[in-house]
Image (cartoon, rainbow, N blue to C red; front, top):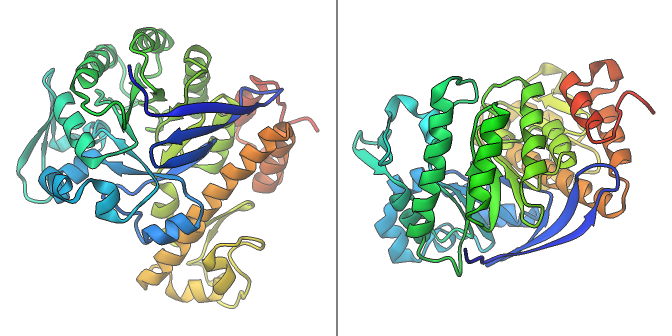
Length: 394
């Protein structure tokens, strides 16, 4: 199918499956590996578009389901799409709304036609079909739009998983047919199949035939064992076309990002950085700081030495301790820092791949974060060993 992107691989890691690339989209270039902050309802909670741009963010997420409810398709058409509506001049990726089948399952009824939701705002019913999802995303104007897929929890087993996989393939065909703007918006397919390797293989085999501009690994990060998670990721990256961007949906913990880059993933998203900020948790290279704790009340250092975000330049841990969870400014300032941390981490990963020192970067990253090798997550050790990095050796 038509593509509105270009994909240039700048460098490949000589040890792992990692690569650094430039993904050029209608609203500008995106350096990958990339973490994409999530602005579900047209905003990153607690951060303005100008602030996000100032952090060097090249692409962020909106959610089709939520924007379809409010402000609604008619208003988006009138104003010229979500970029204009929210004052964001860089790239957008829209999730199709499929994930809400899991997160809002009590409100959802799933059939071959689509998924029917009850609005959490006013109780009205909304039927989200592949055709309606494409129509909404065409109105939103996202640079990357995700197919509507049949999403089941990663903890689900049995025939429902296979049913969802085949339905996702059928819905992809309907999405391709309904997509009205392939010359300016890119439709990505989403690989389903749960934790079953054979279902994942079959899904990839079928979806690759559709030749979409990019592919996503869906249906993970739902509470499954991490040792199963990484095995699905690496299976998928082994089988997916290496000539196109690969996106692993819903991944946001720092160690998960670094490991999945080594396994061959290019793109990630998660609400984690801003969600954890609302609880007073600040992300750093040496671990998470819970700024609600009294030990920070007279700590006049920034959250992280060397961080160039406005929070670290202007405010101390002591100040943040006094306002966190009590004043909205606390959430605002920590959200800025956490987003800056995630974006900077991915830039550092990309630089290390280009300079062919990614294995050394990984060793230092895990040492800084966990200190003792005995504390390294076993799943991460196993995953990295599969791509020729032994964390337990110098």
